Length: 259
Ligand SMILES: NC(=O)CCC(=O)C(=O)O
Image 1: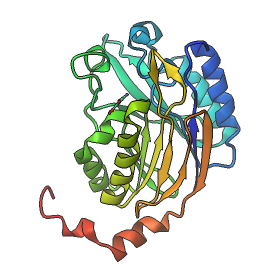
Image 2 (image 1 turned 180 degrees about the vertical axis):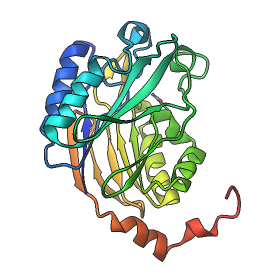
Image 3 (image 1 turned 90 degrees about the vertical axis):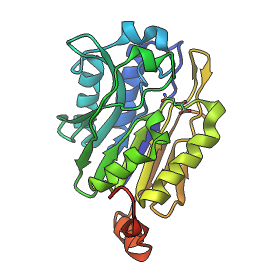
Image 4 (image 1 turned 90 degrees about the horizontal axis):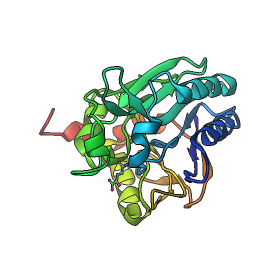
């Protein structure tokens, strides 16, 4: 399975609409990949809290339209990262959109763990409460978003639901880049899954983004890692590696708690 991670730059000098068009073109350039991934909140920026209200979209809003068309044109499964979703009842959610190669919405995921403690996303947005997995032709995917990466119990639940590949769009800051790289590998090792972790580049709302998107195999080896700037990572994944790793080193079978 070929996967492409688009580590797009989020820069306040570029309009949201221009970035949407550019993201669509970048997705179309990945024709030939099976799965394409964009980061968290790339239209507005994960730390652009002051714009969340004005840039919020209905689920089937402009980002949905642009990404559905891009998935169809490229003929790829597209995890289109997340948007600020305005629910018809009023609350905002950090909602990921996943499209099939025919441009249909296959899944949504509302971020469960909101970042910011007593400010930012944690107070402006509502939390999701549903685990989301999706069966692709070659692998079962479990999804999570950014700060979720710090909560291993979520990933274990995804593995219990059958996930073999964990897809994690993010808008992770540069100052905690070491945590990002460490946790992405930890989630792969402890769950014996592929991890596709796609962040943003650039600086928005005064927060420099880490970049360093990464693809980790089920043994914890880094197969590809981006730098800090905008970049597309493309990697061929051998899906048999998940079962092989779990068979040769059956640690998941030795669980005592939480089964
Ligand atoms: N957008 C986020 O969830 C940021 C998470 C983060 O900065 C951290 O966990 O550290």
